[in-house]
Length: 550
Image (cartoon, rainbow, N blue to C red; front, side):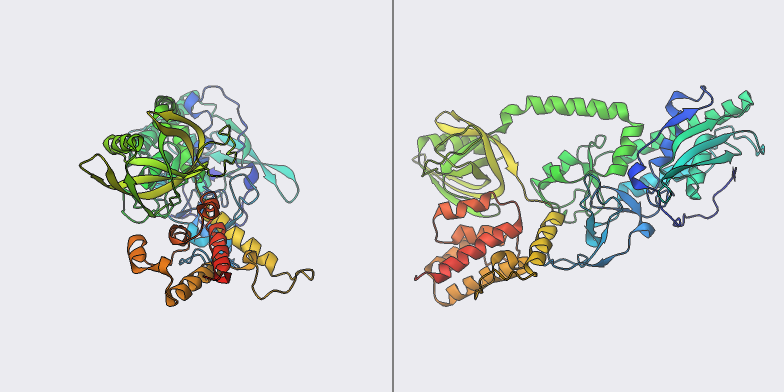
């Protein structure tokens, strides 16, 4: 058995071997005494909240991983160059590593170094844990060093090499369980995946009561100080479903979604958030989430209940007014002349509502079945949410509108209101950046293996081209068309839609907006959920048009 008095160094060092991460969540607990306070009957679970799952020490300079887990910066796995990826072009995306959580739910296995970053809230929280658990509490009665007083903690840890459990123990010589267990973890002697934890209390009941009071005081002070650190800086309430931005700040998931509806800047530091609008698919910050759930379970439950009531009460707001007319695309302007009475009413209501949002869908000219119970409705199932940027009401009641696309949607249910269509919709978002990169690497790697049955052609198949090559193909087509004086690239068109984008994510929307082909040919781009797929559609259009006799 071991005595625990003080940490051997001010900062933890990496352990020689990490624990089995797949069993880190197990926490079988028993106790030889029944008089531990109910709130602290498993004090090792409090310490486990801030332990690195690789070295088992309290997290030191924590890194937030794309899968939502956190590790010490010194515990980052060995990095290696990434190959077969050309999009996105950004600093820090040249190297990657295999995550410790590869093969588990919510982890794709391979991460980019550029996607790992600091965690401001977690750093602040770790400082509070150290201040309250690693040092004596001034207003608590602190027992002296009584030597071997019989207070022992025992546990078992799974050994991967032998596929067996090893029994371990430690003797805590003074103060409460929280203090002793935290210092055990600090020295790397308390595995984060310890199971069947047993607490053997001191035979001296008076002394044991002092230890328990010390635990209670430390826990309550820690909880009180933590409360101020886990407020969302958007809604100013307890963070619900914590989501951490690339700049390291943590907010409620829904608050991030609301922010991204209006700006791409962080509410705290004003840096670009750089996150996809589909935050529902982004992994939560697991460490912060577990800390909040452990210390503030009742408040979390109350917030979820209130949040659920808001969702039920807001169903009527999900009825999106639809303008059945043409194709519109995200980030691109749409110019409208409103003259039909039903759409005059609709646009006036949209403008007066304050949010200025409505949906644009194209006519279902061929009467295709749209599925989801919609049948062969008069409009297509996929559309774009537009926000009114400019509204000019003419003397005779007509109006001129300039609206910009902000997101895509899929119609789930549709009805009518005063002559115009309204719909319940589902937002359509792209796959994650990690999935985007994996898709490109997989397709280009498969293309590198020659197939003897393939016919030799002068042009490479689009699936075999890198994402950057697909973008270059379409941009080269536009350059050639401009040199030949194509009327659809008239300066007035370029003035309305802007210059040729260099951003691969924005280019397909721009290209589809100005390209002189039938809307039915452009329509599939609205349901494509990756930049690469949209660039392949753009490249196919470019090749087909290049082969035509204009």
